[in-house]
Length: 115
Length: 141
Image (cartoon, rainbow over all chains, first blue to last red; front, side, top):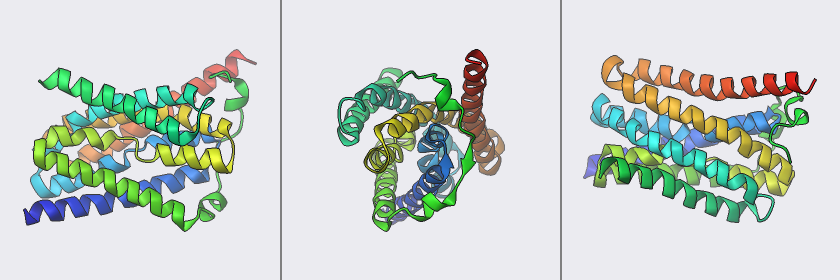
């Protein structure tokens, strides 16, 4: 239990830090079309996989990376859904729809593949 | 707005830290909280449902929603759309990252696996971008 709490806190701290770092890098890069690449940087993934390797080993981290493949497909869906909606509604509302698309593709695809 | 307009690919790629230095602390705090929250959820899901299920969240769009919102508010809708275009390519890179990490972690260890995965992300995302750029600029010459 304590180990799970420590792992979660460590992953949260590392993930938050890397998200900020990549976001700042994206802010510094121009044009925004190129900087957008870094909006999909593997910040959470790097933090998560490093903590997983340290906490549980390479095997569990590899399994996490397999799950991440479905998350990446969801991310593509998010980005594709958001683009036409940005012209019609606010970025906040658009992101909400995008998250719905992510859930549909990532979680749906995962359940189809592994259930 | 055409997806492959020459004008969107013409500006030279450059880095200017002035914009990054002027980011309000509040915006950084929001991004940190979002990233930390997503990571914590990933860890909790892994604890409850297994490592593979937790891995889903490793590719959740943590940076993009805040980026789109801030760009829309502080610059323009066009720049938000541009950033989203880039994120599609970045997401393809995420898939390459995940595939490389999945394959190499049990075979080569964490250090090699994560370095190669990082190169795979950059190579895929950047490669797609520069290939598209070259095609668009050549076609519309």
